[in-house]
Structures are given as structure tokens and as C-alpha cells.
Amino acid sequence: MPYDEALERFEPVLGLETHIELGTASKMFCGCPTAFGAPPNTQVCPVCLALPGSLPVANATAIESTIRIGLALNCSIAEWCRFARKNYFYPDMPKNYQISQYDEPLCFDGYLDVEVNGEIVRVEIERVHLEEDTGKSTHVGGSTGRIHGADYSIVDYNRAGIPLVEIVTKPIAGTDRLAPEVARAYATELREVMRALGVSDVRMEEGSMRCDVNVSLMPRGSSEWGTRTETKNVNSLRSVERAVRSEIERQAGILAEGGRIIQETRHFHEDTGTTTSGRSKEEAQDYRYFPEPDLVPIAPDRAWVTELKAALPELPRVKRKRLQQEWGVSDLDMEAMHNADAIDLVEATVSAGAPPADARKWWMGELARRANEAGVPLSALAITPDQIARVCAMVAGGALNDKLARQVLEGVLNGEGSPDEVVAARGLQIVNDEGELSAIIDQVLADNADAADKVRNGKIAAVGALVGGVMKASRGKADAGRARELILDKLGVSE
Amino acid sequence: MSAITRDEVAHLARLSRLALSDEELDHFAAQLDVIIGAVARVAEVAADDIPPTSHALPLANVYRPDEARPGLTPERALSGAPAVEDDRFRVPRILGEEA
Image (cartoon, rainbow over the protein chains, first blue to last red):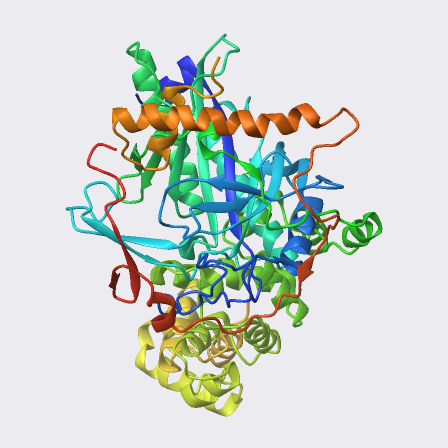
């Protein structure tokens, strides 16, 4: 059912479960390293392979990071809690269970305020708990490379045991037709909070941040929530938004025809923007959770928690408000920079000495265009805020104009060196030498006698063509304003 | 009344991916019932003033510093695996076509 029609008849209720892989040096319960992309089964040991006789010991930094995440999300921190075994029969964990937390999460009852179209939406956080990541299965045989229909699977346990924080929202109702945008804004804000805390590299494409999207619909006028589905494999912020929209449309179609929604896991497909059915979810009781006997309880010292809270960094939304005031930009411009992930880059450029307006102009203009062309985020461009600040300084000092500056940026992006090196190697300095400029103008006036006569006879608008000629002859390196003055001077015309 | 039903045992067997025959289900259901009964006697002993205990040690906050150290080589890690392919543990089909 088309989105607009679906929203006329039903109201969506969202829930988001986000998994964050912590950027610790070692795994959650053993000393194995955690590098992404290492050759298979090179970061494993008796503990994370569950060999008999091995015992887990919790990683102190992972505990601290989880508490800091909870505090940044305005949660209460448990005074005492335990790990729990989640039993399931699946080869992605060699233990036959995952160490997680069940009814005693480390952090609970918080919120995260997110901004959608200039409005603040408060997303309530149910819990933040700590668990271990699973291994990576590759399914062999069958037609699709997926688990269904595969002949067998092969498993790499490098990822098994990496600390994983799960952040679960309370049901988010009342977002109405903005549900997809709220979901995306939440995931975006959460990612920035993690970055500000420095607890994870939160790369969705590498799986260090993963978002599961729960959606249910209730008929307008009803207050009874419908059956929800949980969509996995949502690998980008944009996909979060698309997955919510697609599930709303799909569920509305089924409900409108009198059908029933099945509680199940669904998989999002990047190429089609739609979801397909996965395995039907096991009930919580099927996991037979029980307190983990191999680990002792966590009882964070209150004074320590207070210290951690006091030492939290400035959080992204507060920081954005401050920067917006300092830079004097509109809500709209700020939101555009936020959406383009440009705020930190602009901030660093300003810190390196560039005026905010110039820093913003380059990152949101020329550089955004080039990043877009290359299909990469701004931060992946081969240019630094310091280099942008240097280009800004050269423009301000009159050594470059905007056109030349763009060529300098191109050179830096091509790996031709620093801005100064590119200017020197490409000969991009503005022609400030009056003698050289004068010679170019004389040549242009000689080549364009008609236009020159028009100007002499008082048709000053014709001077544009002459200035254009000078810019062309100097390959963009002339100062256009000065050229205009000199031309009028030579033709004996004053404005 | 039994503490665990035959249906519950069948359900547990399915979760554990154990294929039990009808005779085995009868056999194990009866045995498990006895075992649960034995464990339940502990609950009879526990008075109200004894808090539920999940651990034998009166300890909390036992952590290790976040320091990486080498584990096993892939050869060692995979040496006990029943099947190996591409330096990975090879396991039988996880889900059937219609699972």
C-alpha cells in the first residue's frame, strides 16, 4: 500500500535495537585482539572458542564504556547486576550460548533527544546492556548465499566475544508520518554520541553499529498496538529510514486486506529497499536465560559512576547548539551540515584559523560535490581541515580567487601535495604583477577592437566580455576586479 | 502431577536439535521428572531469610585490564574441528529450506 494511504489508515509504532561493537583492544572475556578484517580464526583462544576448562573474565574498559554510554543516554546505572546465559543452538557461538544480560541490564530508563525538521523528539531508552558479539558465518551452496537452502556453513570466530552493547528504545508512538525520519534521526544521533564518547568507531558498513528496526501498526483511532516485526540487515542510516517506510507499507497492505502480521525477523535488502521474511523468532523463554555462573556480579561503585558522569564530553546536540551560535548560521544550514556529516570538519577548519562562513562554503560546496561524485563521505576525502584553512587564508590574502582555489583543492585531492605545493607546481598564483596584467589587457584590447570601441563610446556593459577575455588569457589567474579597473582606465572611460 | 511434561521435553529436544524417538521421549520425560523433583527439594530447605544465590563466591567486580595478547594460531584453533574449510570451522546445514 502506498505510504500516504497507509498513514491515513494506520499509525506506526517504532522500536529500535542498536548493537554497538566497543572499540576495546581486547575481547569482552578474553585477551584476544579485536582488529576488523584479520584472516579467519587468527584472533581466537580457548576462552572465545569455549574449550573445556576455560573461564571468562570481564574486560574493565568494556564495563566502563557501557556505563558511560548509559550516562550519556540519561540512564540510571544498576547498583548490582549480573551477566546471563542466553542459550541457543546456532554455530555462530561455539559455547552454544551467548553471555548477555537479561533482567538486570547495566543501564536502564534513559532518553535521547533527537531533532527532526527542527522539532525535538524525545526517544525513551528502555535499557543498555553488555554482551558478546557472535562469530561470522558464511553460507555455502544453494542459490542465494543465504542461510536458507545452504548446503553447509563455515564459521570464523574472530568476532566471537568482541564486547557488544545493545541499546533498546521503549516503543516510540506518536511519530505519525515522520516515523522513518525519527528512526533515522535517532540512529544518527546515537552514532554521534558514540563518537563523542570515543567508545566505538560506529561503522555501519563494517558492522560495528547495527540497527534492528521494529515496526507495528495500529488502526487510526485504536490504542491497541499491533504485532511487530523486527527487520535486520539494515546497514546504513539511509536504510534505517527506508526499512521503516517499507515495513509500514507492507504491513498496511496485509492489514487492509484483513490479513494478520506474523511476529518474525525480516531481512532488509539494500537493492530493492524492501524486506523479506527471515526465521520466526524464538520466544524469550526458549533461550532459557539464567545467571552466568562463570562470572561474578557487577556492582559499580557510586563515587566512580559520579566521576564518570562528570567527565562526560560535551554531547553532540549541545555542541551543535553552541557551534550554531558561534558561527551564526541558520537552523537550515546547520541541519544541512549535520546531515552531510560536516560539522566536525567545519569545526576543525575553523579551529585551524578559517572564518566559519568560508569553512562551511568549501565543505558544503565544492568538497560536498566531489565527495558525492566519488560516492564517499566527506571525511573520506584526501584533504584535511588544516589544508582547507590554508586555502581560505590564501584567498583572504589575495593570492588566490575562488576559481583558482578550486583548482588547488583538486590538486590536493589528486595527491599532488599541500595547497602551497599545488600552487607552486601548477603555477596558480593570482597575477598581481601589474606589468604582466597590463600586457595581457593590451593584447585582449587589440584582439577585441569592436568591444573596446563600444566601451569607449559609453557602452560600459560591454566591458564584461573584455574582462572575460583577460581571465581566459591569464587562465583564470588574473584578479577580475583589478582587470576591469585597468581596462576602463586604458580606454579612458570612467564609471 | 509431573514437574515436566512430555511435550515440554519434546520442545526442549527441538531447541537442542536432538532427534528423540517416541520411546526416548517417554524414557527421558520420566527421568527428567525425577531429577527436577530432586532439585526442588533444595527449595523446600531454603527459608525466607535465604536470598536466591546464583554464585558460590561472595565477590563482585572482578575484571581484567583491556590488554590484547596473542591467542592460538589458526592451525591450533582448528586442530580439534571435525571439518575445516578456508581456515574456518565447517558446520552442517543450519536451517532447512523451510525452517
